[in-house]
Length: 615
Image 1 (cartoon, helix red, strand yellow):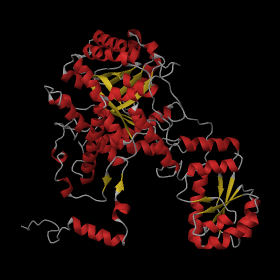
Image 2: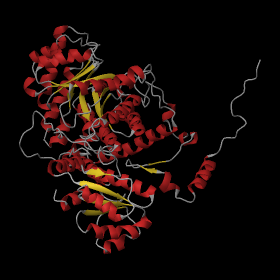
Image 3: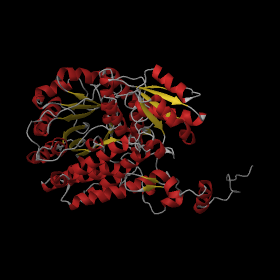
Image 4: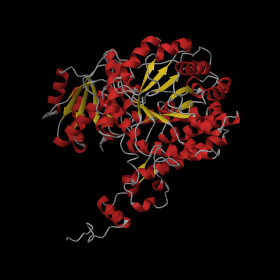
């Protein structure tokens, strides 16, 4: 019988210090901290590699699926989640037809957004006609002022039909604080309805009432730690209110549901859901529930709209697909994939079908629903989980010191924090510190807007009254570039001509950079293989009726080519130098004032060019 030997026993495992020494050699003197350590926006740094020893002080790797503190998920036997699609109810009969149709196409969770004037027992009957409610996850939402009436109508329908209350999984969403954040409205009088709805539906063990919509923060540009920390504070605010109103803590915690967004940060989003369950379980534990299972965090994930784009909109499919994967691997209860065309139009049958299939793809073909918490034990993700938990907890404690989430919203602390992040991220996008493929990086040169414009939505209880509280600003990250590009398209599309000359590698690289730079504003760009003389290049540009001539060469050769080209052009078109050469001051002294390079604020530079061109 052959001897059984462990593989690689003759090799000695390198130590962490040996790895670091080797990396330092490969860096050839470059600063390790600057070159390889990722300084995240979440308040902590990420190292370029992790080893088992990095987890020795962490408790998360010892957790088990389905057991307190639920960091590894609420289930023990699978990672199954509900595939959800939302329906705006403008006509209960038509909404019912659509619901029955999509239930045959892979959906097993329905979300109904019902206007306040349609909330009635009669309309609920029309809406749910023919739907087997015991096997479908149902979600209802209306304006907070009519949530109690909606809950009564839903309860009356279930009672009338004789459904088994133990089997019904549904949510009558009540989240008045979200209206404070999005509309600046004073909803404090409505908060008293929460305990009433919870009591009304207490006989349904799978019912949820108090909902926390941090997807709103996500779509306003919040960083992951901000969404996490505020989710905890928001949820704790509702939980404390219910307990103070005399609701049993187990019932109160059980009826909580969190609606969280998912951004493009793939691994960190996985870790966010793990950290959220861990921290929420610790919060609920402080209320001393009788059943540890009451500390489970029920999460519906929705892919973000913040990073979606109007131009090159099919790229939105790539964004939402990786986001859906993060959510699934993070162990959520249900998921909504936002249709790719949501930023500029009402989703079509086609876009909704694709959105459904994006979930079905990872579920039925990639089997993401089979394995519980597959990221467990990953040195990297375990580190992210712990780091996010620590930073999220700090933010939670900060809000508690302010008197709780409601008080922080009244003071505008939450709104100011998220809005400041939104401003920073827009600034980073303008400078290409944050990339949006197809918008501020590698735009489609030939694409036109074809009438696409940013879609807007309004709450059915919105009024023209001046809001007493601050509001969130929810401008998508791509909006500034899109507005500029559409303005250019509607006014005048300038022609930018690449005058490529000199060093082959440098002129090609700079021409490609300049084409991408200028196309972000919708300019028509003309690239070239190269010219022997600047005169030949300028003549070709003028023959092409160029509005902008961009000279593309190497830094050393600009001293030779740039000034003669500028003088020969003689103001017949705008002259731009691609790069920031050492001779820049000499070029400026000769009258050259336009340069495009990696340190430019792309958005502001393009606005300036538009102004100079009379656009």
